[in-house]
Image (cartoon, rainbow, N blue to C red; front, side, top):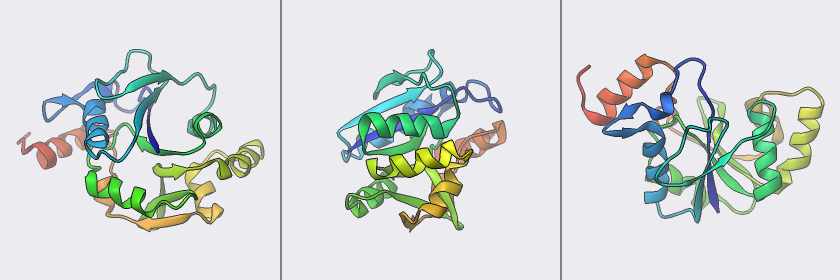
Length: 183
């Protein structure tokens, strides 16, 4: 199994993936946590931001024209199965990764938090390609909505572990929580 980290240029918090969190770039923290789990064969940073890279994984340019659903479709077509991870999710940990990998039995599986599907902490498989493509061709854009209607297996998770950094207040909170910084 491989991990694909999805990271695009943020419109809400510019250059967030390169911002410092606990002495490292946010994207390096996320990729390092995945690497240190020793559960995945390869980690790929899939990004539309050509200036973004991580020292813990290889980078592949996302040349899709559309939104996240198009990027995921492309990756399913190319890699068949992978763990999708958000590049702005610094709270993920070894236990969260281990739980989804150990529950994987060949079919797509994802985390929910508070009843909401987390599309960027889900294992996608080739079996989802056609239904997801049909959904997209029918005008669907929400991965969460697709997952909630797809019947894939789910694991309920602590929503705090799946939080993303979208605003400077999120980054400040992560610094306090994860680094012990007083901001």
